[in-house]
Length: 211
Image (cartoon, rainbow, N blue to C red; front, side, top):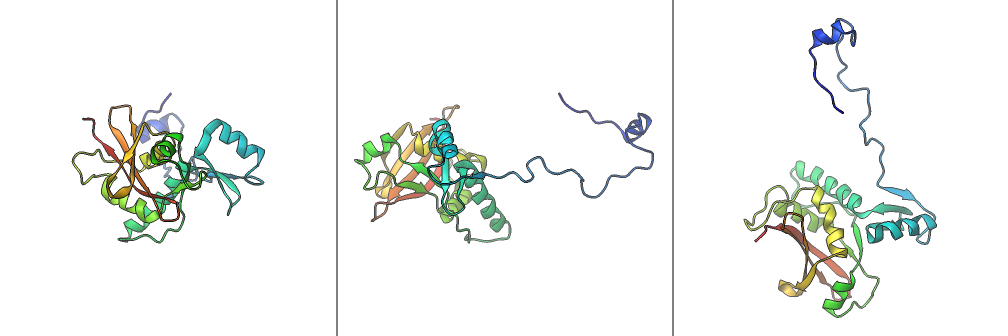
């Protein structure tokens, strides 16, 4: 159920450690998630394993044709965010990360509101440069007092809001605003648009306070 600290002298008296013991500078134990992978190898996009996972988890399960592996889009987002964070810690103002997490096809509601997509199977990709701006403007500290600062972990919800929005409405500059209500009454806001070729563009993601 838990652990409780004891003094060094008590640990020696109980025989847990020998007198004079000093712990090593580095732990001999591996981290709990050491070696954990975000994806699994499959034979292809029609793999029975992939299709079984998609039946259970829907669009959050994606297939990467380059690595021929299955991945959870939230895990992919977190991986890219970690790489961007590493760059930011070194003072970088831009990002050199190339990976673009994909969060699946549009919902029926989104397609209905915008009048359909040129390509029904078009997916939303998240450019690292735009994720960088979200980290700078909305994570930890939000520049807009109307918003609640996001955590890095909440960025994994982008795909959930994209695939299961409560509402879709026109946004400024010709894009669309997707909204998903959180348990505390606040609302996640996702802004996307469409390029000249019919592709979907991710712009920003933030959390608006309960009104």
